[in-house]
Image 1: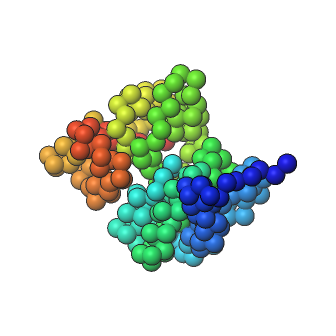
Image 2 (image 1 turned 135 degrees about the vertical axis):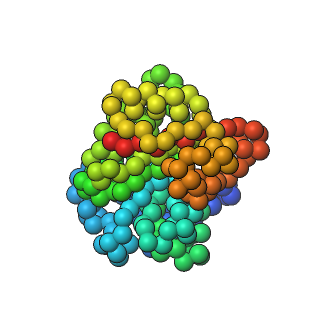
Image 3 (image 1 turned 45 degrees about the vertical axis):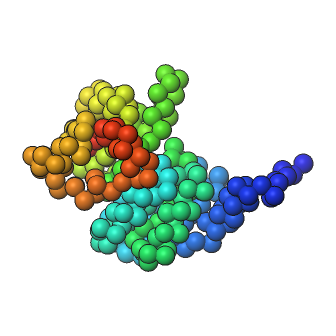
Length: 239
C-alpha cells in the first residue's frame, strides 16, 4: 500500500516542497540507494564534472544548513566545497543561499555519510571538516561517531596524502574521544584547543591564526551556545 501524506500539515508540505526543489537545484546531488554501494558516476570526477574545474575539494560532513560550506566558499573562490548530509530539509537552506549568492564553488550531496568511500575516488578530497556533529555518546553508538576508527578508515580511502581532518565541537567528551582515537591509530595532531575563540584572541598559535577566517564562521546553533557561555573545542589532524 502506498504511503499517504497529510499535506494539510504545513511542516510536512514544506518539507516535501523542499525535497522537490533539491532534485532541481543545479548545486545539489542526491544519491540513489543502489549507487551508494557501487557505480556512482561522479566518483573520481567531482571537480571536472560537477564544479567544472580542477580545484581542490573540501568536504563538510553532517553539514546541516551548510553555513560552513557556504562561508568557506565565499572566502576561497579558488577551492571547491561540498556539504554532505542526509537531511534534505536542512540542505535546502544552504543550497538556496548558495544559488542566490551565486556561489558556484559550493555544492551539496544528500546521502548517508557512511557511504562516502563509494562516492569519491582515492585522493579526490583535500580536506574534511566535521562541524558540531551528533556526538553519539552512547557506548553502542561508537561506530557512528564521525571521528571513530571506522570513519577514519573511510576518510583514508578518499583523502589526499597530507590532507587535514578538522573537528569543531561544543561536546568535550567527543573532543576527548577524538584525541584518544588519534593516539590509538598513531595519527598526527596538528593543533588542538579546548577554547578555540580564546586561543584565537591570544594569537599565539600559528596554525589557528592561519585558519582564523574559517574558524570564525559560526553556525546558528554555535552562536546560541556561545551566548550560553559554552567553550568550543577544536582539533586538526592528518592520517
